[in-house]
Image 1 (tube, rainbow, N blue to C red):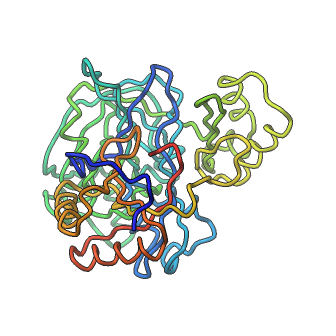
Image 2 (image 1 turned 30 degrees about the vertical axis):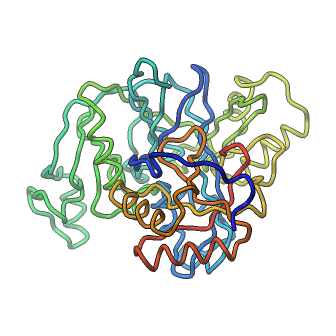
Image 3 (image 1 turned 180 degrees about the vertical axis):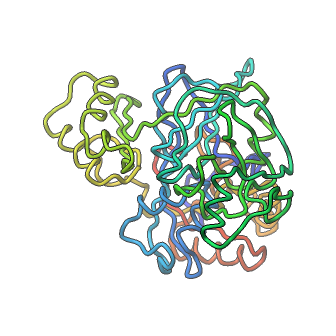
Length: 384
């Protein structure tokens, strides 16, 4: 049933971390993660897949422009853009890149262990309510926060015929969610949300929203006085394993100096590598025109996966869900079929299988027994 190279048996079959966590091999590492192809199920939306893999709305939609966000269909190849060029900023505390709507947290190094980065998608301020740029820090943490809307938001809701109370109590109707961390910038928070679909979109009044499970995880790690840098870098570039990688995100209309401007990409590329061919520059220009927001190696149009070797992936499931899947897979006889993904913490593949159909039958059986979705997956060769 399994391909010849399945010989791995691990003690901790499915790690308990639900975060997107990557090891930083060197002090200069700026490219982390790995893009995957997952095959959609009939009942999936792109947002179902995105949330399970800790991806925001715009990230999954922009990476798959040919697919219907609400009804991609059964058996469609969905690119999960889980490779990132880290922002050009000191790797310290929290770094937020508004252009990609993503947060990066660099925990303090632990002796004898590799440095790491934890990353989550975010929702940010909409046009007219831009999230501010600059350096600040976490000044307060609060579980089950209340929300006191400022006068400007009260006025907006009154105009819409939806007046707000003076204070919104903690609970399911509170837009701050269950956890909030106050920034040194007056009036701005990192917080959860009671509307998770807004993660990966510009929909807030300037605060930074995270999925409920992500803010809970981050809240438990981040301490008061952790530095925070908020920046805007739509174009990123870095060398990785001898190759140049570039990443281009759609510029915001309220930052017109960046719109369709090659200069920031040129600067990013020249900081990473001083000599490129004419074809390389044409490739970079094409990436700006497409604005897919996906990290790509210069000259690599297709995302190369190991074809005809199939795995199953459960995404960034919570600790409790992973334990359920863990026990189910062991009971099904797959205790020797767990493959930790290289360089990532908490991501494990099941397989390999020799055909899409074989992997799909096992994925369906897992779903029928647990109610938890898993996906047939293709992976690049460097993750095994």
